[in-house]
Image (cartoon, rainbow over all chains, first blue to last red; front, side, top):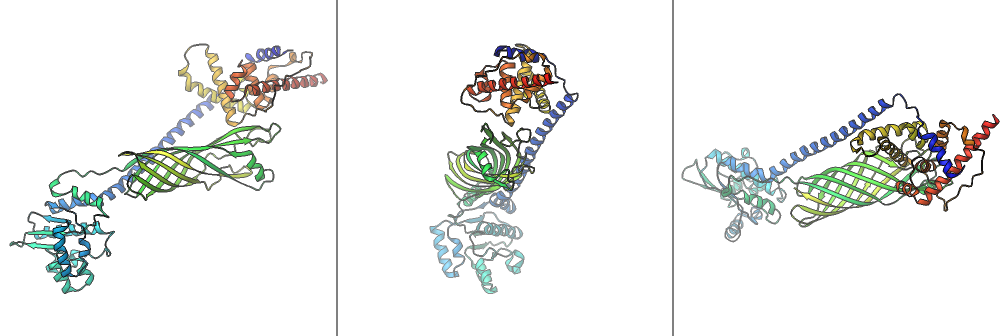
Length: 434
Length: 152
């Protein structure tokens, strides 16, 4: 029988041969279809819940953050019910810590030469309202200067003041630090930095308060404050969403480590049959800036580790193997740069959604390949250092060297050896700021 | 369709997996059928591709040999004539995966070596060598089976 006859024999014999199909095949097809349907709904649900949770968490933090810088000014305006002018001032803070006479002189000079933060009520206020305004002003001062003052608790509440000081006067930091009643009274009455100007009518007052702000350290706050002057009363305060989306791709190096106590699979053998080649990761994240420094982000991360699998048999055959992961990273960031070029330290956890593999170098007793990897590998740790360059108002280009450490074994428990894969690489991507 | 799956599979359970997956794909892509050519041909293509995909997910071992080995089979007294269809299917299933895939694609489906090489990501020479080895092994198995039946 020649080649053609040989081929024809097989074709003729099998072309119309009907093989019996298992009775439950249709049910199995339906069942598998349902499982796939369920998987995609489950996967979509997890994503939706993650994003929704992230959104509400981020939103909550944003409100707190904005409250510090924006809302207090608005509250002050509405609480006093009067126009309040806020003007930046340079070195008034240190003046409050100097002796009274010297301070007076310096303040007198600075009043003409350097601008200062002034909060002036231009309309008469009653005693009760006045106290409310002062209380708000004190709070504002305290919050604005909290990081820069030597003693954050130097101000006291209205209740702690003597009765005659509760209306129409301020207690100064110097007075409280000295803790002397007489000095407190005199300095409070005469303190240029917190002056009270009374009118003929006791129920009305014109209050001039010099609130020190360090312009170099807190220019952004000053700018925000300037936007909220009385002349701009009624304007809506623009709250930044501080949301951003990043997309990235990374060539990566994967390092596999084997642990084995089985003499049939010595380390030298495993290292020879599983050789890792060029790998990569890609992903999309959505994130939020909590403050100028802190951020958090989450998204989807796809990882593929390419391997060369060398079977140790008579054929000595090599085949390409792939190990893929789909993960959800949750990463916190701390920004240590400023301006157009920023550096961000990233750290977080990576939750594995699924793991799959293609190709195997291990065979069972019947000569069939064995899939040695788990379908999920648990939690990994992420460390990265991002360098970002601002391209325009909304877009940043970044590069980020990173390391992903997988503490858990990726092989199934029944496999006679254990394997871990860590990854390192440099992500390149774009970040879009909303 | 089950016969196609058995031809490509190593055993019956693998063949059933292929059939199941094949039908799922048929339902998924049924809207892509353009009524050009026979529906049976379209179905066969789906099942062959499904079988190849499943096998590639695991591993297909193609023994690398340098040169095409022409099978020089002895002239036999047609031991094929007594073979039943299920025995032929069993013989094909017993072939190593690489041999089995190339044999099925070339002999049964009518792909050329070039097409097989492109589809499987192997060289033209590897495809030829796999086919030659598959045929040689099949002949040996058939002859051994014939001898056994003669003894009986």
